[in-house]
Length: 608
Image (cartoon, rainbow, N blue to C red; front, side, top):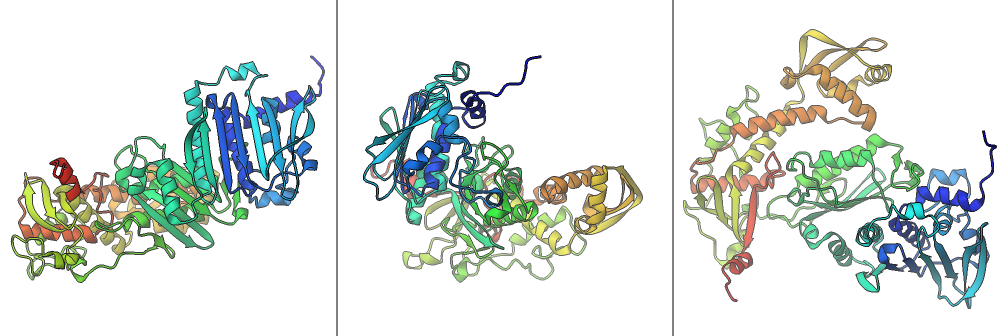
């Protein structure tokens, strides 16, 4: 066996670089984070050949003193933390002190800088086998410029793993996009092979911030995004979340930041998926740009070398806050509501003022006909949806004739968002006229969502009722799961279960939710336990109940080829305006669409 030897500093740095530098995009990420930590107001990035030949980052930040330049390219040398206590509350993007040393070990790197008040700048680069730093004068304004050339020139094996220029630049541009979205008060510029790709001015107001998001994420995203701003218990969530109708086939437009750092976290992903679960079409992914701000001491960013992963100290609290905030934001979107409305003050929405004629109608049925606005006395059944359909026949908007027309222009401010029905098409679609133009409504999908939301509300008001099992179910679990079930019985009780501990690794299920009595109770308890232990919360039971209520709503909703009168169609439109998530049916399909007069003019080439 060979003897143990001490590796020289150059080889050690190249090994360590494998954790930090995977490709040119990794280099850019580290350099941009350093520039932002320096308080830069303007950052310019120049790239050649996808970043393999050149990556240059210029900033106008605080700069680096001449005496500190040799240390800047040394491993574990940083100005951002001083001791172990600083790791408990990291407030900067960088803190390890490894990036520049790792980059310089696998490329030709030069760092030039100047601090305010100095007549000239200085530059440093490492040379020789021992990577000794060499400092020389350099003309440089206030700030720092880091120039990296010929990535992996001295490690051919790693260079062979790089992809084509286009692929590497796509990765690099994605990193630029993530960083540019994280700090709106800084201006950014990106060039590739001397061609300007992005020129982003500082976003000092809401308009400029929205313009930057539209530039980086696409105009379509901003046109179908909901601004969100929620603050509660020292945690703030703000940003933009795309409407369910703007879902994507890939999870490629999801940017989540914690204290300005873009991250990937299972707790966050789970909370967002749950918030969208009731409105997304099968297999689709939501789009969002969201920022979470909380006390740095409540989040550990020293989890992974790339700093993409974090660990929350109060996972359950963070999950609950994210889920409730996003779920509420989606629920409060109504037809005709401006997407500029935001959610503030502990999740309560700011809604545009509605005229009395825009308010939802009273849904009480006349004497002798059951009201579908309140829970039926005999519980839930497929007939409830049909009773709602029947009730539409008696709901005529006061003052609206059998064949209503749009009011004069002077009175159009009272027109409801979805307007007034004018016809029914093939027994499937409702055609309505509003101020903007033509509204097309999928009759079954819209009524399905209305029925579904009312069933959920009725079930919620009636609380979760439990039913004892004739023969209790015994299941073997781990001691950790048994301890949790014994210590927190209220969690299961709130979901409609009664679970007792019968041994060190045995649980007994004695009661289950009444509506799920025919389901596999053992599998449900196991799933709930795994969710609670992994994420601090579980929505398994709610999902099961929602699936059952969704099926009931689908079977009880108005079917195709059912001819509705004009008053019945108008009553359905008013219900849509008053129902949460009415823009999508239970399966995530859109329920209505708007065709503006401008769209219709373009379709028929009017004025061309």
